[in-house]
Amino acid sequence: MKLLNKNKYESSAYWTQLVQLMIFDNIKRYLDENHLTRTEFAARLGVSKGYVSQILNGDFDHKLSKLVELALACDMVPRIELMPKAYAEQVVENTYLQPKDWTQSSVYFRTIPSVKPEAKAPASAQSVKVLPVVGKSSVRIGSCDWGVAENRKSTNKIA
Amino acid sequence: MDEYHLCPLDDIGNPKYEFYFLYKNGCCFCKEFIDSLQQKSDIDELAELLAIMGKVDNNNLPQSKYRHITGGKRDRKDVYEFKTKHLRLYAIKKEPDYYLVVAGYKKGQDKDIAKVFRHFNYIPDRIAIKDESDEVEAGKDSGSDDVK
Image (cartoon, each protein chain N blue to C red):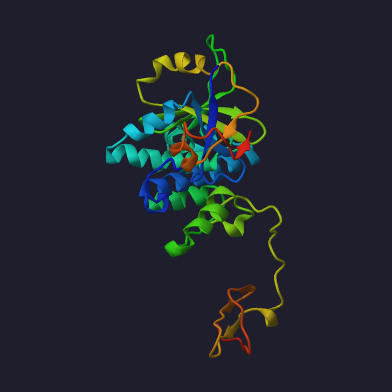
Protein backbone atom coordinates (compact mmCIF):
# COMPACT_ATOMS: atom_id res chain seq x y z
CA MET A 1 0.00 0.00 0.00
CA LYS A 2 1.18 3.50 -0.77
CA LEU A 3 0.70 6.73 1.16
CA LEU A 4 0.75 8.71 -2.06
CA ASN A 5 -1.26 7.64 -5.08
CA LYS A 6 1.36 8.82 -7.53
CA ASN A 7 5.06 8.51 -8.11
CA LYS A 8 6.71 10.51 -5.34
CA TYR A 9 9.77 11.07 -7.51
CA GLU A 10 7.62 13.17 -9.86
CA SER A 11 6.60 15.48 -7.03
CA SER A 12 8.55 18.73 -6.71
CA ALA A 13 7.18 19.09 -3.16
CA TYR A 14 8.84 15.79 -2.21
CA TRP A 15 12.25 16.85 -3.52
CA THR A 16 11.98 20.33 -2.04
CA GLN A 17 11.28 18.85 1.36
CA LEU A 18 14.25 16.48 1.07
CA VAL A 19 16.59 19.34 0.19
CA GLN A 20 15.23 21.47 3.04
CA LEU A 21 15.77 18.65 5.51
CA MET A 22 19.28 18.12 4.19
CA ILE A 23 20.12 21.80 4.64
CA PHE A 24 18.66 21.72 8.15
CA ASP A 25 20.70 18.61 8.93
CA ASN A 26 23.93 20.25 7.73
CA ILE A 27 23.44 23.56 9.51
CA LYS A 28 22.39 21.92 12.77
CA ARG A 29 25.34 19.57 12.68
CA TYR A 30 27.70 22.46 12.03
CA LEU A 31 26.28 24.48 14.93
CA ASP A 32 26.50 21.46 17.24
CA GLU A 33 30.05 20.56 16.26
CA ASN A 34 31.27 24.14 16.64
CA HIS A 35 29.20 24.92 19.74
CA LEU A 36 27.63 27.90 18.03
CA THR A 37 24.36 29.43 19.13
CA ARG A 38 21.77 30.58 16.65
CA THR A 39 22.52 34.17 17.63
CA GLU A 40 26.24 33.77 16.94
CA PHE A 41 25.56 32.09 13.62
CA ALA A 42 23.11 34.83 12.67
CA ALA A 43 25.76 37.46 13.43
CA ARG A 44 28.25 35.61 11.27
CA LEU A 45 25.76 35.48 8.40
CA GLY A 46 24.66 39.06 8.93
CA VAL A 47 21.03 38.05 9.27
CA SER A 48 18.49 38.05 12.06
CA LYS A 49 18.19 35.28 14.62
CA GLY A 50 14.69 34.71 13.33
CA TYR A 51 16.05 33.99 9.89
CA VAL A 52 18.34 31.30 11.28
CA SER A 53 15.42 29.86 13.21
CA GLN A 54 13.49 29.74 9.96
CA ILE A 55 16.28 27.66 8.43
CA LEU A 56 16.41 25.45 11.49
CA ASN A 57 12.68 24.88 11.23
CA GLY A 58 13.40 23.16 7.96
CA ASP A 59 11.73 25.87 5.88
CA PHE A 60 14.64 27.11 3.79
CA ASP A 61 13.19 28.26 0.48
CA HIS A 62 15.25 31.28 -0.39
CA LYS A 63 17.54 32.44 -3.15
CA LEU A 64 20.37 30.35 -4.42
CA SER A 65 22.79 33.07 -3.36
CA LYS A 66 21.61 32.65 0.22
CA LEU A 67 22.37 28.94 0.06
CA VAL A 68 25.90 29.80 -1.02
CA GLU A 69 26.23 32.34 1.79
CA LEU A 70 25.05 29.69 4.25
CA ALA A 71 27.66 27.26 3.02
CA LEU A 72 30.44 29.83 3.22
CA ALA A 73 29.36 30.84 6.72
CA CYS A 74 29.90 27.19 7.65
CA ASP A 75 33.42 27.29 6.14
CA MET A 76 32.18 25.01 3.39
CA VAL A 77 31.27 25.20 -0.26
CA PRO A 78 28.05 23.87 -1.77
CA ARG A 79 28.13 20.89 -4.08
CA ILE A 80 25.02 20.48 -6.19
CA GLU A 81 24.48 18.17 -9.12
CA LEU A 82 21.53 17.12 -11.20
CA MET A 83 20.99 13.46 -11.93
CA PRO A 84 18.81 11.63 -14.48
CA LYS A 85 15.37 10.65 -13.17
CA ALA A 86 16.24 7.04 -13.77
CA TYR A 87 18.49 7.23 -10.72
CA ALA A 88 15.89 8.86 -8.47
CA GLU A 89 15.62 5.94 -6.07
CA GLN A 90 19.39 5.62 -5.62
CA VAL A 91 19.78 9.39 -5.24
CA VAL A 92 17.14 9.53 -2.51
CA GLU A 93 18.60 6.59 -0.67
CA ASN A 94 22.27 7.48 -0.93
CA THR A 95 22.12 11.24 -0.81
CA TYR A 96 19.17 12.23 1.30
CA LEU A 97 18.05 9.34 3.46
CA GLN A 98 21.24 7.53 4.22
CA PRO A 99 24.30 9.47 3.11
CA LYS A 100 27.30 7.33 3.89
CA ASP A 101 29.80 10.14 3.74
CA TRP A 102 30.08 13.63 2.34
CA THR A 103 31.08 12.45 -1.11
CA GLN A 104 27.69 10.71 -1.41
CA SER A 105 25.78 13.87 -0.71
CA SER A 106 24.77 16.42 -3.32
CA VAL A 107 23.95 19.21 -0.90
CA TYR A 108 26.43 18.83 1.84
CA PHE A 109 28.82 21.21 3.44
CA ARG A 110 29.75 19.83 6.82
CA THR A 111 33.21 19.99 8.27
CA ILE A 112 35.53 17.25 7.17
CA PRO A 113 37.81 16.71 10.15
CA SER A 114 40.32 14.53 8.31
CA VAL A 115 41.16 17.15 5.71
CA LYS A 116 44.16 19.23 6.65
CA PRO A 117 45.84 21.96 4.64
CA GLU A 118 48.56 20.48 2.52
CA ALA A 119 52.15 21.49 2.97
CA LYS A 120 53.31 23.74 0.17
CA ALA A 121 54.68 21.65 -2.63
CA PRO A 122 58.09 22.40 -4.11
CA ALA A 123 58.04 24.82 -7.01
CA SER A 124 58.85 22.11 -9.54
CA ALA A 125 55.78 20.10 -8.57
CA GLN A 126 53.36 23.00 -8.78
CA SER A 127 51.24 23.97 -11.77
CA VAL A 128 51.01 20.51 -13.25
CA LYS A 129 48.28 20.00 -15.75
CA VAL A 130 47.52 16.64 -17.34
CA LEU A 131 45.93 16.97 -20.71
CA PRO A 132 43.27 14.46 -21.70
CA VAL A 133 44.05 12.09 -24.49
CA VAL A 134 41.33 10.72 -26.76
CA GLY A 135 39.26 8.23 -24.79
CA LYS A 136 38.58 8.69 -21.11
CA SER A 137 38.54 12.27 -20.02
CA SER A 138 40.66 13.61 -17.25
CA VAL A 139 41.49 16.97 -15.87
CA ARG A 140 44.19 17.37 -13.29
CA ILE A 141 44.86 20.72 -11.76
CA GLY A 142 47.41 20.84 -8.98
CA SER A 143 46.74 17.91 -6.65
CA CYS A 144 43.08 17.39 -7.66
CA ASP A 145 42.32 14.57 -10.04
CA TRP A 146 38.78 14.87 -11.42
CA GLY A 147 38.62 11.69 -13.43
CA VAL A 148 40.17 8.40 -14.34
CA ALA A 149 42.58 8.70 -17.15
CA GLU A 150 44.67 6.44 -19.22
CA ASN A 151 47.73 7.35 -21.25
CA ARG A 152 48.03 10.79 -19.78
CA LYS A 153 50.46 13.20 -21.31
CA SER A 154 51.98 15.31 -18.63
CA THR A 155 53.18 18.78 -19.40
CA ASN A 156 54.81 20.80 -16.74
CA LYS A 157 54.53 24.52 -16.37
CA ILE A 158 51.57 24.90 -18.67
CA ALA A 159 49.15 26.51 -16.25
CA MET B 1 -12.98 -8.93 20.74
CA ASP B 2 -11.32 -6.29 18.62
CA GLU B 3 -9.42 -7.40 15.54
CA TYR B 4 -6.19 -5.60 14.65
CA HIS B 5 -4.05 -5.84 11.59
CA LEU B 6 -1.25 -3.90 9.91
CA CYS B 7 -0.85 -2.86 6.31
CA PRO B 8 2.72 -2.02 5.23
CA LEU B 9 3.43 1.33 3.60
CA ASP B 10 5.98 0.56 0.96
CA ASP B 11 6.68 4.00 -0.51
CA ILE B 12 8.30 5.62 2.53
CA GLY B 13 11.81 4.30 1.94
CA ASN B 14 13.14 4.97 5.44
CA PRO B 15 16.36 2.95 5.82
CA LYS B 16 15.80 2.38 9.54
CA TYR B 17 12.06 2.30 10.21
CA GLU B 18 9.16 0.50 8.61
CA PHE B 19 5.74 2.12 8.53
CA TYR B 20 2.35 0.42 8.78
CA PHE B 21 -1.25 1.56 8.77
CA LEU B 22 -2.91 0.23 11.90
CA TYR B 23 -6.40 -1.15 11.34
CA LYS B 24 -8.84 -1.83 14.12
CA ASN B 25 -11.88 -3.88 13.20
CA GLY B 26 -11.18 -3.27 9.51
CA CYS B 27 -10.99 0.52 9.93
CA CYS B 28 -7.96 2.79 9.65
CA PHE B 29 -8.51 6.45 10.54
CA CYS B 30 -5.39 7.50 8.69
CA LYS B 31 -6.26 5.68 5.46
CA GLU B 32 -9.69 7.29 5.46
CA PHE B 33 -8.13 10.70 6.00
CA ILE B 34 -5.61 10.27 3.21
CA ASP B 35 -8.27 9.00 0.81
CA SER B 36 -10.26 12.14 1.54
CA LEU B 37 -7.46 14.44 0.32
CA GLN B 38 -8.17 15.59 -3.22
CA GLN B 39 -6.73 19.09 -3.62
CA LYS B 40 -3.34 19.48 -5.26
CA SER B 41 -1.98 21.43 -2.30
CA ASP B 42 -2.94 18.57 0.00
CA ILE B 43 -1.34 15.99 -2.29
CA ASP B 44 1.84 18.10 -2.35
CA GLU B 45 1.90 18.23 1.42
CA LEU B 46 1.35 14.49 1.52
CA ALA B 47 4.47 14.16 -0.64
CA GLU B 48 6.30 16.34 1.88
CA LEU B 49 5.15 14.02 4.65
CA LEU B 50 6.58 11.12 2.66
CA ALA B 51 9.94 12.87 2.63
CA ILE B 52 9.79 13.61 6.35
CA MET B 53 8.82 10.04 7.23
CA GLY B 54 11.53 8.73 4.96
CA LYS B 55 14.14 10.87 6.66
CA VAL B 56 13.13 10.38 10.27
CA ASP B 57 15.73 8.95 12.58
CA ASN B 58 16.46 9.83 16.18
CA ASN B 59 16.21 13.61 16.63
CA ASN B 60 17.42 14.45 13.14
CA LEU B 61 14.40 16.50 12.13
CA PRO B 62 13.21 19.95 13.18
CA GLN B 63 10.52 20.08 15.84
CA SER B 64 8.31 21.81 13.33
CA LYS B 65 8.26 18.66 11.19
CA TYR B 66 8.33 15.86 13.70
CA ARG B 67 7.76 15.79 17.44
CA HIS B 68 6.97 13.57 20.33
CA ILE B 69 3.49 14.23 21.69
CA THR B 70 3.92 14.71 25.40
CA GLY B 71 2.04 16.23 28.28
CA GLY B 72 -1.62 16.20 29.18
CA LYS B 73 -3.39 13.14 30.42
CA ARG B 74 -2.68 11.06 27.39
CA ASP B 75 -2.69 7.36 28.01
CA ARG B 76 -0.09 6.61 25.39
CA LYS B 77 3.44 7.99 25.72
CA ASP B 78 4.74 6.75 22.39
CA VAL B 79 2.81 8.96 19.99
CA TYR B 80 4.66 11.05 17.41
CA GLU B 81 3.42 13.72 15.04
CA PHE B 82 4.59 14.28 11.46
CA LYS B 83 3.75 17.81 10.34
CA THR B 84 3.55 19.96 7.26
CA LYS B 85 1.98 23.36 6.96
CA HIS B 86 -1.59 22.02 7.00
CA LEU B 87 -1.41 18.26 7.48
CA ARG B 88 -0.68 16.15 10.54
CA LEU B 89 -0.09 12.42 10.72
CA TYR B 90 0.06 10.60 14.05
CA ALA B 91 2.00 7.43 14.61
CA ILE B 92 2.83 5.12 17.46
CA LYS B 93 6.53 4.37 17.60
CA LYS B 94 7.36 0.76 18.35
CA GLU B 95 10.99 0.19 19.13
CA PRO B 96 13.25 -0.80 17.68
CA ASP B 97 12.23 -0.28 14.11
CA TYR B 98 8.66 0.54 13.16
CA TYR B 99 5.85 3.06 13.34
CA LEU B 100 2.13 2.37 13.36
CA VAL B 101 0.43 5.21 11.51
CA VAL B 102 -2.89 5.65 13.21
CA ALA B 103 -4.52 8.95 12.34
CA GLY B 104 -4.29 12.04 10.21
CA TYR B 105 -5.82 15.49 10.39
CA LYS B 106 -5.76 18.87 8.80
CA LYS B 107 -4.43 21.70 10.90
CA GLY B 108 -7.01 22.86 13.41
CA GLN B 109 -8.94 19.59 13.36
CA ASP B 110 -6.65 17.75 15.71
CA LYS B 111 -8.17 18.84 19.00
CA ASP B 112 -9.70 15.45 19.57
CA ILE B 113 -6.59 13.43 18.86
CA ALA B 114 -6.68 12.12 22.43
CA LYS B 115 -10.06 10.53 21.69
CA VAL B 116 -8.60 8.72 18.70
CA PHE B 117 -5.71 7.39 20.70
CA ARG B 118 -8.06 6.18 23.39
CA HIS B 119 -9.12 3.62 20.77
CA PHE B 120 -5.55 2.38 20.79
CA ASN B 121 -4.77 2.30 24.48
CA TYR B 122 -4.44 -1.42 24.12
CA ILE B 123 -2.58 -2.80 21.15
CA PRO B 124 -1.75 -6.50 21.13
CA ASP B 125 1.90 -7.49 21.07
CA ARG B 126 1.45 -9.57 17.95
CA ILE B 127 -0.54 -8.18 15.05
CA ALA B 128 -1.08 -9.81 11.69
CA ILE B 129 0.34 -8.05 8.65
CA LYS B 130 -1.81 -8.05 5.55
CA ASP B 131 -0.88 -6.56 2.25
CA GLU B 132 -3.23 -4.68 -0.05
CA SER B 133 -4.46 -7.78 -1.85
CA ASP B 134 -5.36 -9.40 1.45
CA GLU B 135 -7.25 -6.23 2.27
CA VAL B 136 -9.48 -6.72 -0.75
CA GLU B 137 -10.12 -10.25 0.35
CA ALA B 138 -10.87 -9.18 3.90
CA GLY B 139 -13.71 -11.13 5.37
CA LYS B 140 -13.12 -14.14 3.18
CA ASP B 141 -9.85 -15.21 4.67
CA SER B 142 -8.33 -14.39 8.02
CA GLY B 143 -4.92 -15.63 6.98
CA SER B 144 -1.88 -13.39 7.37
CA ASP B 145 1.57 -13.11 5.84
CA ASP B 146 3.46 -12.20 8.92
CA VAL B 147 3.10 -11.14 12.48
CA LYS B 148 4.63 -8.16 14.25
